[in-house]
Length: 224
Image 1 (tube, one colour):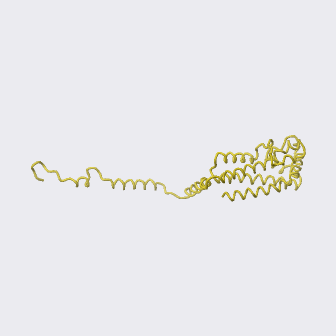
Image 2 (cartoon, one colour; image 1 turned 45 degrees about the horizontal axis):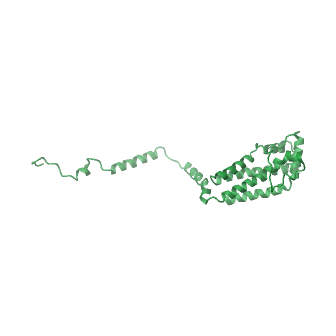
C-alpha cells in the first residue's frame, strides 16, 4: 500500500512539473476568464472559482486545457488524501499534516493568502505586485500540498509495519462480518444449551453422587 501511494504521489509530481512549465499560460487563462466574467477586482481565492471560470467564462481551447490540467491535479491530490487516510490510523504529526492537505484541496477553501516559500519560486515568476496579489495563492497551492504530502510519507515510513495495517485489517474484518447471514435466536439458543450442559456436569448437593459416598443410616442398636 505504501509503495502504491508513493508511486501515485510521484505521478502527480511529474504532472505538476509539466504544469509549472506552463505557468504563464495558466495566468493568462485566468486573466482572460476574469475579464470575461467582469471580475477584475478580487484575487483567485479557491479551486471552485477556477472551476467556475473554466465552465462559464473560458473562451478558447488553450485556456480550457491549462485550467483543466490544474483542476485534474487538484482532484488527484484530493484522492491521495483519501488513500493516506486509509493507509494507517495516524499519529498526531501525520494527522495534522493530512488535515492541512484536506483543507487545502477543498473546493471552497480560501487560498488567496498562500505563499509558497523557498525553494519554490512560482510567486517570484509572477510579473508584478498586482499579479502576485491576484495569483500568488493559486500558483502556491499545489507545491505547498506536495510538500505536506512528502512530509506525511516520510513520517509514515518510520512507523512500525503493524501500524500500517491498523486501518485496513479492521475494515476488512468488519466487511466480512457484515456479509455473514445469521439466523435470529441462534446464538442465544447455543448459549442456553451450553449453560445447560455445564449445569448437568456440576454435581448437585444431596444428589446420588454425593449420597453414595456415605453408608446408609442405621438407628441406634437397630437394623435396617
